[in-house]
Image (cartoon, rainbow, N blue to C red; front, side, top):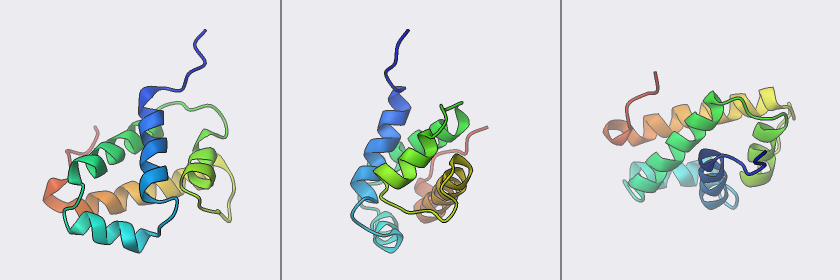
Length: 105
């Protein structure tokens, strides 16, 4: 049995650590809207969406949000973390505009 996390989960973790851990959503929005780092942002968006679509072990999503993104949630559950991450992916798509990849099916 392989206990290593899936590659996309690792990419999601890396994205959250790089772009949210020590900053806020307003700073991320400015970066994305300015077109800076678009390929890295798109890769992070896709990794987050893939992670949300997968069957993750319990506490995985909460770990992403509270650990990797450094965000406290009022609803400190995977369900609360899922809402946070879905909102983040929606915002990223909005901020990317025409640079956003096609939405997952």
